[in-house]
Amino acid sequence: MEFTERQARIVEIVKNSSPITGEQIAAKLDLTRATLRPDLTILTMAGVLEARPRVGYFYKEKKETSPYMDRLRQLRVGDFKSLPISIRENISIYDAIVTMFTQNVGSLTVVGEGQTLRGMVSRKDLLKSTLGKTDLQQVPVSIIMTRMPNIIMTTADEPVLEAARRLTLHQIDTLPVVEAFIDEKGEERYEVIGRFTKTNVTKLFVQIGSLGAQS
Image (cartoon, rainbow, N blue to C red; front, side):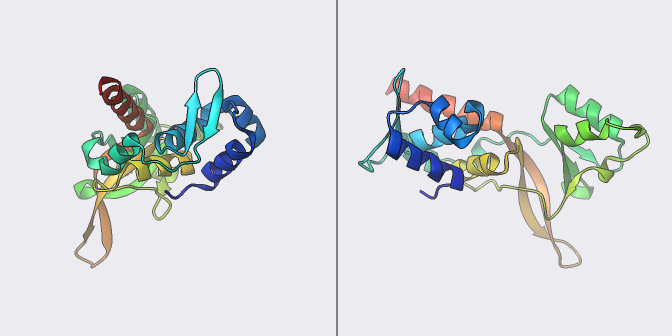
């Protein structure tokens, strides 16, 4: 398993200091416990760390295959993705804010004709736009959106573990799920077919945990 830099540091800390609590690990990295929770979950499910209630985390010397990890490796984003919540780039920032809160999502996908990916707008982007004297009903969302090639994406056939790692690594809450195609000009474009979010990851972990409890 390939670790992120932060996950590798967590493993090294646990190796040298186990048993150690999540709060103690977070303190050593100068991070919050909530920030580390996805990393600790992945490392535990991968069988690299062992979590013992009211004791802490231990490094597992034996690299035994975890049944949970086997299940994760077999699962694909397409089986757990949600429907995309998309807007057009010419709508106002105000309308984007309304859409975000009525749909109760953390990010919006900005699309063109044929659901072609044009950009992403996060809650943080919209919050920043409200600071100052911007006329939110007149300025289009295209002014503040993140554009290619700075959009972090996933595909339906990617393993959910890789998509979850990307969410954690880039500290974002949503990955647009896309299919690549070549347009009439011979350029590669991406059609948005869904979204993969931290909520999808949480539901997946609950599902796997429930299956483990029944076995």
